[in-house]
Image (cartoon, rainbow, N blue to C red; front, top):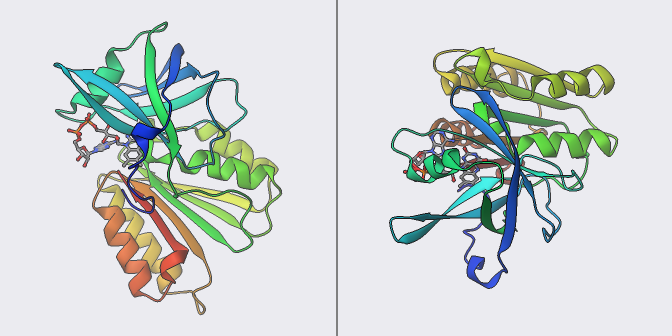
Length: 239
Ligand SMILES: Cc1cc2nc3c(=O)[nH]c(=O)nc-3n(C[C@H](O)[C@H](O)[C@H](O)COP(=O)(O)OP(=O)(O)OC[C@H]3O[C@@H](n4cnc5c(N)ncnc54)[C@H](O)[C@@H]3O)c2cc1C
């Protein structure tokens, strides 16, 4: 789960009934649902909600990141199919008008305001979800230091929100990004991180926010921390 502690207090939070008002397919296996959530408390960029998933007489819960920003008209969850994944299959079966039961928001893998030190965001495919509102918050609260997004996927259709990312880069001089398309995204990301930061930074002053659903997240975390970046400067969330 990465930076955030386990959501042990889920049962003490009131449930939020959220109605699906819109569905958008990013590609053949990645979808966003947009929810009406009249009673949603404020969400800090990077936080997730816990979704109740009733299956075969039991109720599972699964965390899904809030991919939208607090104040947006609808709350967006963005997810991809996982082979054999029963929780996400339930979400793919939902239709406009259906209701989901959520608790939250939870999580400490967050960015509340524009950081004052140079910040690198690293993600693969759908795991851009927590970084998207963080980048938006940083760009909209007037960046104080360079922001760089390194975003990888195994093919172009799994790079999400590119129009928005390009718009930030065109309008905010302190924000830039690079996309990487490679069959093994985490190997590619680690190679770039080694060449660009580990081997070139004279002083380990940058901070990193890393998210993905692959062990590569932990490898990259350990590589950066092992190279001398402070523990708290290498923030991560592994799904
Ligand atoms: C804090 C947090 C936030 C998350 N936010 C999102 C989100 O915004 N969107 C999203 O799609 N998922 C997200 N996940 C993952 C999600 O909660 C589920 O684990 C995922 O949908 C699979 O659940 P399942 O019940 O279908 O399959 P399971 O059988 O429970 O999962 C099988 C395995 O799939 C792997 N996995 C998890 N997520 C993915 C993924 N996206 N792609 C490929 N493999 C995966 C995990 O290693 C997991 O052990 C998040 C997880 C955490 C911990």
